[in-house]
Image 1 (tube, rainbow, N blue to C red):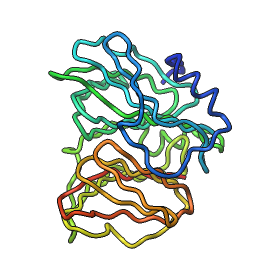
Image 2: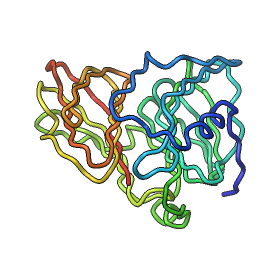
Image 3: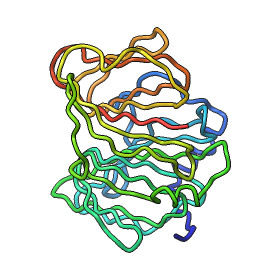
Length: 256
């Protein structure tokens, strides 16, 4: 891996502006974020700021329209990224190998990992990008020894049924920026809670894939649908539930 830093100008501006701004707990709705247009691309800034474990945390969504030029090979000097494919097909290249990821595909990119993404589907490619820098020193060797950068499709993983629906475990490991980062999907086929309200040291995001959910975070109530996500700070009591009985599904990922 080789450190080469390429950052879109508006994202660089967001990083500078948000150095002392705390990310707010609650819900972030897909429809609430304005779109920035450029040649064959669209971008949405969703949030940026600090969090209990990160001195910088930013999330945006990017769309490569059909026919868009692929991003050139680039890397982040001291930023780790978690990328989630929302729609379309992406050709993801790093370590001189490429893999096609579809909706629900996930990429964990260590700092200094050369990579590129290309829209190879018949329509638009849209993906979420979570960029973060730990308050603790970066540990590249820890990330490499625990699997390095990775790319996963849902079909690579085993669906584990449960009484309420089921889910897929994506990973649970240390990385260069996290002592632990864990990710899975959950499907709820019945009305009611996924589990009892609880709290933990990790900060967590619930990203809605389909259907409707309701969420309680420290006695405040929220509701969300596909494309929306809930942000839960470390130590906050929270619980998610299916309010309708119609199937719903979501990503859950947490870290410290």
